[in-house]
Length: 290
Picture 1 (cartoon, rainbow, N blue to C red):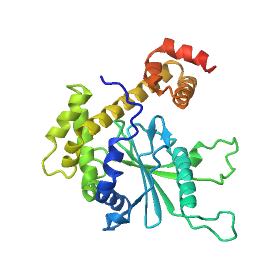
Picture 2: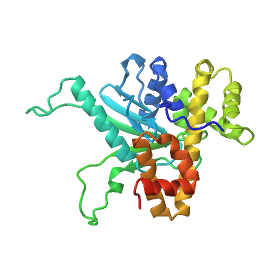
Picture 3: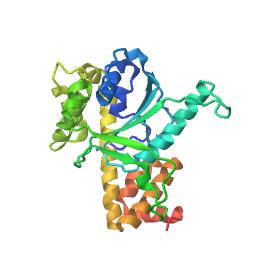
Picture 4: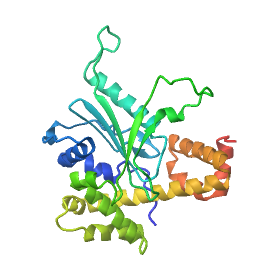
């Protein structure tokens, strides 16, 4: 199996919907999510921060459309911490927006900012209902009657094939992307991931909008799919190893170790750490994680 490519920062989702040459697909996705009917893809202003990296991957897609700041991310593993991640990312985007537009946040006049809309598109194998993830669920003061002064809400939408049929009907590229992911999973039952991706692309119906783009960028698409597949497998092993060591204590220690490895430029060791207990224990000592 090909190794995880930690240097590659894109996912297929962002490659499809965050690509300036595919603005019409981005607009279609926005319209489907927000029940709007905008028609000019050139109104989209991409704001994705290229060097904002978390767990070896950058945020998938952010753009401004008619003073709405949209932050989209695709997740193949359920992550209840998306509100705090999106809060941190949104802070970077607003800082960039304020600087670019020369806004004075220290003056007497109120500064007008784009409205944030945060969405996670979930396509993992665990069954998940659409839901709203809230930052306040993470707050633990010990006093249940203390109301937090900060709230962040992230809308999680299941985009697996067969889910959210209205959304899929209104955004054909998204429906085709869901089909592709499902085909790769089915193919994976009988072949390795690289062949599974190749076959899915070859079997895609001729009338699919995204087909020419995938074929024209086959090498990049295969690399992204392989990377994301291995990322998902690594996270699965991460959870399993955490359970073996004790769910709360094990996951906390392993999580700290993974974060530290990535922060010091040793992200390539993550998969080995997850599957090799001896290596993991040695690194716990190296980083003084108890």
